[in-house]
Image 1 (cartoon, rainbow, N blue to C red):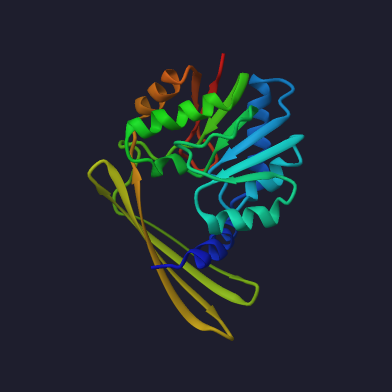
Image 2 (cartoon, rainbow, N blue to C red; image 1 turned 180 degrees about the horizontal axis):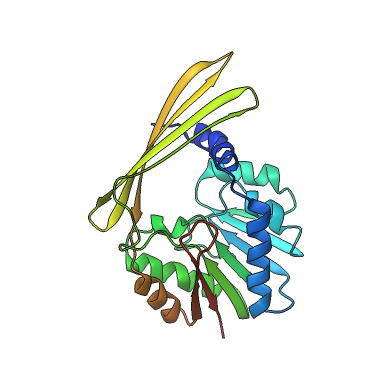
Length: 238
């Protein structure tokens, strides 16, 4: 099993090596939000991970904050965003006693919720932390009909004197994706290390997301393709 600190260390390098453009995604999020809430100036990124989206969003909003469940990820996010209010918390239950103009939840983090009740609870928390007219932007995981069983993803990159290989294999397991991920990390001093991790990511229906937004009081759109091809749900709190 891959240790938490190693996950956080390699995570960013892999996705940047695969060409993920955090700056462009931040610009897109700001544009989508301000088209629906002109003058939006405060933003909360839920499941903020290692804070790379926040680092760019901080230049587009006057005040940004984050919530993250994994302490190792949060530690890196705090190092990258020393001026942001970052909190250790669960998207289903967090309570910051503060309101924002925009809430984002990217990288299909909501797929790690297990049930529609948890999805409902999460969207209710988003609504509770938005000011009237506020905007919630959520990147979903694949829907059951858009998921490709047996999908293999791979990348190989060299950075900071290390060679990193990542390969994943995804299968359907009931109503979820079971994704096995293996890493090889090689460096002159440490030699070759192997890590692996497993994820179970729920294949919610599109209607599950739409109902959760509606139950939380949002008027919602589903926009494609989104940054990863999985689309974006954009909800506005009346």
